[in-house]
Amino acid sequence: MKRGDVAEVAGGCGLGAWVALGVLTMVVVGRSGAPLFADNGLLTWSVHHRPDVAVTLARGITDTGTGIAPYALVVLAGVIAGRTTRQRLLALSIGVACLGVGQALRYGLMAIVARPRPPGVGWETHASGWAFPSGHTTTAALTAGLLTAAVCVRRPPGRTLLVVAIGIWGALVGLTRIYLGVHWFTDVVGGWLFALGWLCMCLWAAARWLPDRLTPGSIVTTPGEAGHAADDSDRGGRPRTA
Image (cartoon, rainbow, N blue to C red; front, side, top):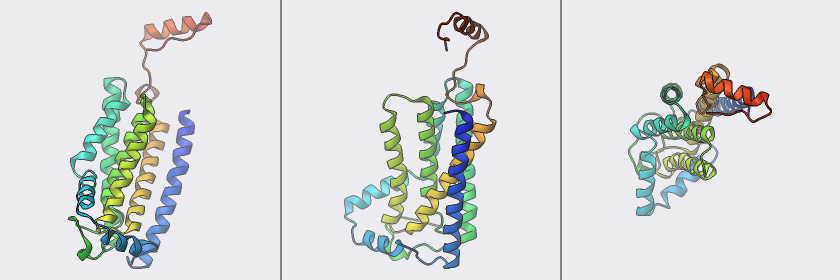
């Protein structure tokens, strides 16, 4: 897909996500943070379906959505995406900036909305701060998106399975927040929408303004190699790439 097409798709998806998040945020604020839609039903189901092994597994998964783990995965994404040291450093820097700024913006929205969490009697893990949008959910979704982008750029063997596994992990972190009783379902949906909107904005900016030679995953040729490729092309052969 051409960079212009990538920018167009990312811009459209990002705009849709921001609009949906805006509507959901207005509903949450308008209801003074009260439970919405399936919030109560899913929380009630979670409270009554908590065998010890499931709770332990959920805690382990939810812990990967915060702290150092997401940043380590974003660094890995940068290493995967680039073909040269410069590309890898740039991809790493962009990824860390995307995640860090996204977390800061999410925190600002959370403080403005100031939605209370579900009743503490149903909690099965530690939580602090306001509820909407979910921080663990947003962080995991941003990380999963950056990893997916890196895999799609490099296109390694088995990339479809990798992308599916990454997506499942990102979704599970959000779902564990509901299962462990520390977030409403709509908090998690808000986190997913925020992450999608911010990721698409970052992708749109990169597709529009990042120089071709610095684009992660692009093939870089030396002047001599470029000349040979042009000669091959003139003779009807296939251009050679590095």
